[in-house]
Image (tube, rainbow, N blue to C red; front, side):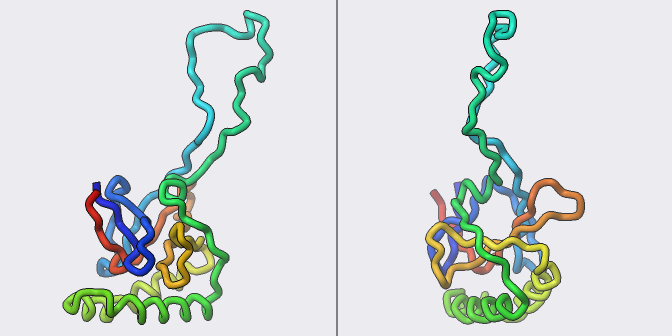
Length: 168
Protein backbone atom coordinates (compact mmCIF):
# COMPACT_ATOMS: atom_id res chain seq x y z
CA UNK A 1 0.00 0.00 0.00
CA UNK A 2 1.19 3.51 -0.77
CA UNK A 3 0.21 6.43 1.43
CA UNK A 4 0.63 9.99 0.17
CA UNK A 5 1.85 12.44 2.80
CA UNK A 6 1.89 16.21 2.68
CA UNK A 7 5.51 17.14 1.94
CA UNK A 8 5.47 20.04 4.40
CA UNK A 9 3.44 18.73 7.35
CA UNK A 10 3.90 14.96 7.05
CA UNK A 11 0.13 14.43 7.36
CA UNK A 12 -1.33 11.46 5.50
CA UNK A 13 -3.75 12.84 2.90
CA UNK A 14 -4.43 10.00 0.46
CA UNK A 15 -3.57 6.40 -0.39
CA UNK A 16 -3.44 4.28 -3.52
CA UNK A 17 -6.76 2.69 -2.53
CA UNK A 18 -8.34 5.89 -3.91
CA UNK A 19 -7.53 6.09 -7.63
CA UNK A 20 -6.70 9.52 -9.00
CA UNK A 21 -6.72 11.26 -12.35
CA UNK A 22 -4.02 13.80 -13.21
CA UNK A 23 -5.28 17.16 -14.45
CA UNK A 24 -3.70 20.56 -15.18
CA UNK A 25 -0.40 19.15 -16.51
CA UNK A 26 -0.14 16.74 -13.59
CA UNK A 27 -0.19 19.54 -11.02
CA UNK A 28 -3.53 18.43 -9.58
CA UNK A 29 -4.84 14.99 -8.74
CA UNK A 30 -8.60 14.56 -8.93
CA UNK A 31 -10.06 11.88 -6.65
CA UNK A 32 -13.69 10.81 -6.34
CA UNK A 33 -14.95 10.65 -2.76
CA UNK A 34 -18.07 8.86 -1.55
CA UNK A 35 -20.57 9.40 1.22
CA UNK A 36 -20.62 6.30 3.44
CA UNK A 37 -22.66 5.29 6.48
CA UNK A 38 -20.86 4.49 9.71
CA UNK A 39 -22.41 2.97 12.76
CA UNK A 40 -25.23 0.47 12.77
CA UNK A 41 -24.86 -2.77 10.91
CA UNK A 42 -28.20 -4.20 9.87
CA UNK A 43 -28.02 -7.97 10.17
CA UNK A 44 -31.08 -9.79 8.88
CA UNK A 45 -31.32 -13.17 10.61
CA UNK A 46 -34.64 -13.97 9.03
CA UNK A 47 -36.72 -13.29 12.13
CA UNK A 48 -39.87 -11.23 11.90
CA UNK A 49 -39.75 -8.88 14.91
CA UNK A 50 -43.19 -7.38 14.28
CA UNK A 51 -44.77 -10.84 14.39
CA UNK A 52 -42.94 -11.48 17.64
CA UNK A 53 -44.36 -8.36 19.29
CA UNK A 54 -41.21 -6.22 19.13
CA UNK A 55 -41.41 -2.45 18.77
CA UNK A 56 -40.63 -1.01 15.36
CA UNK A 57 -37.74 1.04 16.73
CA UNK A 58 -36.14 -1.82 18.61
CA UNK A 59 -32.60 -2.38 17.43
CA UNK A 60 -32.32 1.01 15.72
CA UNK A 61 -28.89 2.52 16.34
CA UNK A 62 -28.92 6.27 16.86
CA UNK A 63 -25.16 6.32 16.28
CA UNK A 64 -25.43 6.06 12.49
CA UNK A 65 -23.40 8.82 10.82
CA UNK A 66 -22.85 9.70 7.17
CA UNK A 67 -19.27 10.68 6.38
CA UNK A 68 -17.16 11.23 3.29
CA UNK A 69 -14.74 8.32 2.99
CA UNK A 70 -11.60 10.38 2.24
CA UNK A 71 -12.29 12.94 4.99
CA UNK A 72 -12.92 10.19 7.53
CA UNK A 73 -10.07 7.88 6.51
CA UNK A 74 -7.40 10.58 6.61
CA UNK A 75 -8.99 12.64 9.40
CA UNK A 76 -9.04 15.76 7.25
CA UNK A 77 -10.04 18.92 9.07
CA UNK A 78 -12.41 21.29 7.29
CA UNK A 79 -11.25 24.90 7.12
CA UNK A 80 -13.22 28.11 6.68
CA UNK A 81 -13.75 29.26 3.10
CA UNK A 82 -11.13 31.43 1.45
CA UNK A 83 -11.86 34.59 -0.50
CA UNK A 84 -9.78 35.33 -3.59
CA UNK A 85 -7.24 37.52 -1.77
CA UNK A 86 -6.68 35.03 1.07
CA UNK A 87 -6.48 32.09 -1.35
CA UNK A 88 -3.87 33.79 -3.56
CA UNK A 89 -1.83 34.73 -0.46
CA UNK A 90 -1.99 31.13 0.79
CA UNK A 91 -0.94 29.73 -2.59
CA UNK A 92 2.00 32.14 -2.90
CA UNK A 93 3.25 31.18 0.56
CA UNK A 94 2.71 27.47 -0.11
CA UNK A 95 4.55 27.62 -3.45
CA UNK A 96 7.45 29.47 -1.80
CA UNK A 97 7.72 26.82 0.95
CA UNK A 98 7.18 23.84 -1.36
CA UNK A 99 9.56 24.70 -4.21
CA UNK A 100 12.84 24.14 -2.28
CA UNK A 101 11.53 20.76 -1.03
CA UNK A 102 11.18 19.47 -4.60
CA UNK A 103 13.98 17.77 -6.52
CA UNK A 104 15.81 20.28 -8.77
CA UNK A 105 14.42 18.82 -12.03
CA UNK A 106 10.88 18.95 -10.61
CA UNK A 107 11.22 22.59 -9.54
CA UNK A 108 11.24 23.93 -13.10
CA UNK A 109 8.20 21.88 -14.10
CA UNK A 110 6.42 23.02 -10.93
CA UNK A 111 7.19 26.71 -11.58
CA UNK A 112 6.05 26.36 -15.19
CA UNK A 113 2.70 24.65 -14.44
CA UNK A 114 1.57 25.83 -11.01
CA UNK A 115 0.03 29.03 -12.36
CA UNK A 116 -2.40 27.04 -14.53
CA UNK A 117 -3.39 24.86 -11.57
CA UNK A 118 -3.90 27.93 -9.38
CA UNK A 119 -6.12 29.55 -12.04
CA UNK A 120 -8.11 26.28 -12.31
CA UNK A 121 -8.72 26.38 -8.53
CA UNK A 122 -9.52 30.10 -8.56
CA UNK A 123 -12.23 29.51 -11.16
CA UNK A 124 -13.90 27.05 -8.75
CA UNK A 125 -13.16 29.03 -5.58
CA UNK A 126 -16.79 29.75 -4.62
CA UNK A 127 -17.64 26.02 -4.90
CA UNK A 128 -14.64 24.66 -3.00
CA UNK A 129 -14.46 23.25 0.49
CA UNK A 130 -11.02 23.43 2.11
CA UNK A 131 -9.36 20.76 4.24
CA UNK A 132 -6.04 20.39 6.02
CA UNK A 133 -4.37 17.28 7.33
CA UNK A 134 -4.93 15.97 10.83
CA UNK A 135 -2.20 18.10 12.44
CA UNK A 136 -3.70 21.30 10.93
CA UNK A 137 -0.10 22.49 10.44
CA UNK A 138 -0.11 26.16 9.36
CA UNK A 139 2.21 25.51 6.42
CA UNK A 140 0.58 22.22 5.39
CA UNK A 141 -1.06 21.85 2.02
CA UNK A 142 -4.76 22.22 1.40
CA UNK A 143 -7.06 19.56 0.01
CA UNK A 144 -9.95 20.94 -2.00
CA UNK A 145 -13.38 19.38 -2.47
CA UNK A 146 -16.31 20.32 -4.68
CA UNK A 147 -19.40 18.75 -6.20
CA UNK A 148 -19.38 18.34 -9.96
CA UNK A 149 -22.60 19.32 -11.74
CA UNK A 150 -25.38 17.13 -10.36
CA UNK A 151 -23.02 14.90 -8.34
CA UNK A 152 -24.06 13.65 -4.91
CA UNK A 153 -20.49 12.66 -3.95
CA UNK A 154 -17.62 15.14 -3.67
CA UNK A 155 -14.56 15.31 -5.90
CA UNK A 156 -11.25 16.07 -4.16
CA UNK A 157 -8.32 17.97 -5.62
CA UNK A 158 -4.74 17.57 -4.38
CA UNK A 159 -1.68 19.60 -5.32
CA UNK A 160 0.35 16.65 -6.62
CA UNK A 161 3.89 18.05 -6.20
CA UNK A 162 3.10 18.59 -2.52
CA UNK A 163 2.58 14.86 -1.94
CA UNK A 164 5.24 12.31 -1.03
CA UNK A 165 4.60 8.61 -1.66
CA UNK A 166 5.42 6.39 1.31
CA UNK A 167 5.27 2.61 0.96
CA UNK A 168 3.63 0.91 3.94
